[in-house]
Image (tube, rainbow, N blue to C red; front, top):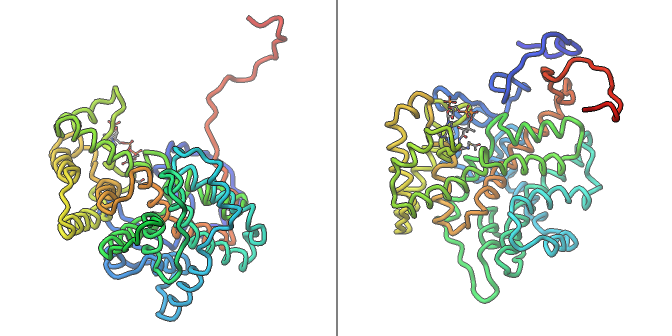
Length: 403
Ligand code: ACO
């Protein structure tokens, strides 16, 4: 019932809300989140049902266009995406310039930003064809860009996409195939990756999505906006937490598996150490994505007969923290990043690629929000205010009179 047009042009009291804890920046019909009850729905569909039944690009379609695709629509979409998976050979040259130890998230945001130099034919955010083709290019090419970032770091030759494979199969093949051996894509890995991408696909106004909207609100093109979103996601308080979490679990393993010591360290504010993969701005009961991922983690380790001490440490850490007053009082529970790294490890994904996988998953959400924002007749440039705390007016002092 809120008529946003009535608010247009109003100025008045400026509210101060550091971190935008209680500030709604937009209305949105994409994702529903109830942090108290641990509910997450994309376009009305519970995340649990989508994770169990869908293919990732089906969910991408749902987020972007608002409805689940029919068989025929999905086939057309698949076809569209598969014709855009290649990178321009000149874009490939970018990889020669990056240092071998460059973080793949830095490569990802640079190459996506550079797409605006290669696709100048489709940069107008107000032209439907431009937007449509850019969205398809982004979704189709991001796995190739990501897999090549890994190949660069490992010094192996790049593997080109094979378009008869599905989205996840294609990515895994581009990551792990080498010229000397055939790579058989393991169906268990494909379904685990598919599930992880789905649970990461959108999460309303999180830091990276708000960044995409913020940049896009100036009418910057979609590649520039998504590139900014990737940079925001990289931080360890956001998507970078999955990499930081596994680093932390390895540190606990190497330090004698004393989980209690790390729970205690996280309570001490002096050194700034936090339990990575714990806590969430919105979920104050449990993160439904973490529940789905923990179960998937069990499944894949059991099915593959893998024993990973990191998983046991994660479980012990969760148990110890959930019994601890500090964590109980502050409603700190494992979040989406707590168990995802264990699955990535089982698939053979190196740690530096964890956040890249998050970016591939989140891309449809970023695109859906960018598109929703541009479709809003009341769209305005995002421009928060501040409460000024600097000096009041003072007379200019010439340089020879300054002490
Ligand atoms: N370990 C220890 N203490 C924590 C943790 C943690 N992981 N998270 C929050 N706290 C404490 C804070 O120190 C603070 O304590 P205080 O009230 O005594 O000052 C209280 O809990 C509230 O924390 P805030 O930082 O104010 O909560 P905020 O909503 O701003 O931050 C965040 C949420 C960033 C997720 C935080 O919980 C955190 O840093 N977690 C670890 C990083 C992480 O896992 N990030 C991934 C988030 S999910 C995602 O982006 C995909």
